[in-house]
Image (cartoon, rainbow, N blue to C red; front, side):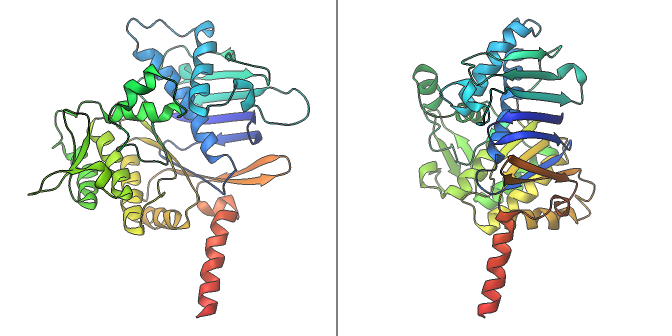
Length: 349
């Protein structure tokens, strides 16, 4: 589990420290406050170390290997012209510093890079072993419709898509778990399948279908975008990517979902937390935040460890407020505007 992250001079962040929960972490802020950048930075580091550890005959981590591998992953995920473009724009030549602390100290990593850096970072502290498992990144866009042929095309040609899409497509195409009737798996899958109206199937041609009982399968391009996002989550659960001790990053889970589906997503997120999965979500949805708050009051989820992060723009970069409840992070402009609209609507009545 990722315990903390210290940032200096990364994109919109001048200096920030994040102390994470082992279960649910919610990053809230209006557009341009760095929500996605925070998720991508954490994902890049976890994914780079996990990918190296999965290679046949993988050697122990070294600074020499990590200085290029970490830079490659950051470049592939963020897609800047050069690595140095991720350093916060300001006067002077300050470096970007990132320090990751885990519950297992042998995984800790600390590195930096300068505005002039092209494709290497400087490793101050390397992990003593590679991370096990794979982190999962769910982007804002659904990927079920672009899945056929996407991974081989991405790996053979230069495509202007961030590597999180490729990584997630690899997980979508993985074999299913042997025992999908396992009680823990069914507890997660059944509500999603009910909300979608069927089960997800990958045919031999590499296309996904929504199989509805007693009917022919429906091609994913014909399925509404909201259920397609649920289909991504259901498929990743069914392949076992979200197993115990996994880490899930989900950027704006509410995007393109109606309120009924957002309610289901909020419930599934907390169910995953109860299975020892560390989750990071970025949002500016008042509806999603209210739904999570309602569920956290329920006896099923009352003991869920939570951490909320409010991001606010300032003249000196983004200011971070954090705490165990949403009330601890102060006023968030993105949420306040929704509340003001509700007040205007009631006044108009």
